[in-house]
Image (cartoon, rainbow, N blue to C red; front, side, top):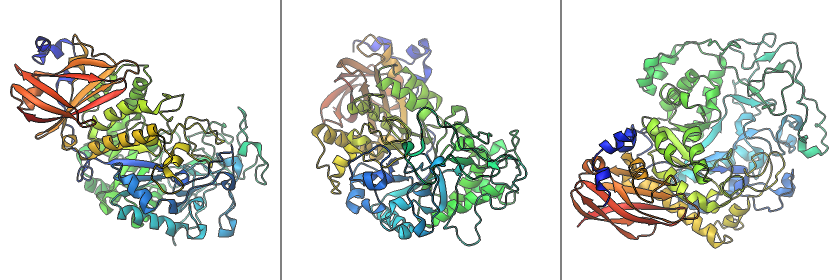
Length: 628
């Protein structure tokens, strides 16, 4: 026990002004549905790309040239392989009918103008009809809604839940709902277009000016410059509407969200709210109280339209929603909408994209979100660690800052907005995601999200057309090569994967299974990082360690982020944690859940110590088994 004097009490941490690193964090209770059967694991799949077996990948290629995946490609075999990764929820991205270039006029669908569509396949966040699904995804476009309902049933039959996107901040410029139920009016149908703003208008207007297509620059041309009957630099919109990202110009910039228009939620152009504010004490009130609060209130028309939309999809069997750019919509609307959802389905899974840490607690506590992206804090910092541009100290600090809401902060390493780990612009090597996945998935009770293809090292290198490589395109028809090798012409057996890709998938499966099923994930977290960081050992800024425990179950997680060097040192478990775990002096057997290799934990004078050896870019997940 050569280091015990340094760590024999929590006083050492006080000296280092790192109190939070020495105290265990009893994380706040997670949403009631989350831990019923273990920690949620979300599999985000870009629905259009998942089943596509075409490998042509022509830039700006048509659906005929490059192919497209269908709902039917999610066979029971495919879904069972997804579930085998430990997945509990599938987020089918890009399902609501959004603007596309392909001609579906024979089905009564109006054609979309390339001047206000990004890419050839269109942005999934420019929704054109909230009451139907993308016709590209159906074997029979006339039967597309029934095909999606069948996919919902198949997913449920395998014991997983279904999440789809809702994009309340903006809709497509060419929004026209062909499938709206009787009595439902389209957005803007009754708007007073003679004024910039009215509480019950669905849009904001640039009064007296017509919309003008953005001026092309930086080499961008619709469809890559290919001729198209509607690609003429014109789009009829009079008067012009505010653009989705808030631009108030009749001619937005090419970098604005020009393909969308912003929804009005009763927020005046000067920022004043035209609805009753939610009292601050409602942070402690449940969704039932929020629902009751809004029941008798006068609310803007847009609120009612989106409430009808989410209930429509709940009735179809959808189990939850991912909200795009939620912080651009007032928190009171979310209180109204989410409480209404929870009254219908208390177990609904509600995930939101919020990037301002100062607003996290309001959107969770007042807005009644179950989960938020932990991007700006945890992901952004972990990415720098993976790239060896920063040390791990900030990860510990983030968990301390967010300890009261940690179970609500969804963790991920990839999604459709972020670069692929194995892209040269990120890490250039999919295996560099291994230690990061261990830390990301096991540090918190929060859900873990996996983006399709991540588990086999997809690198996002294809030039699909709109946008740049490193992110798998969400705007064009494209094949996803590593994922296609796993898909193996619809066999979904990994038959064309190489050994590195097969190994990576098995690794992700192991981590996600531990994350979602190990009892310790339901309990407490404490950092071991500062205690060991400042100790006289080989433990450095490229190392990270913590412990999780619940009742008699304990996991000690140790990670080496260095790419070139293995690390050997004595990992210390300080006295205050040993005391909380009720460990007595003696020897404990410890097993690495990744390799089954045995280690020894010695507790002497109330301090624990394990001699560990980690290869470069590797982790140990040590389960404490018994006392000898």
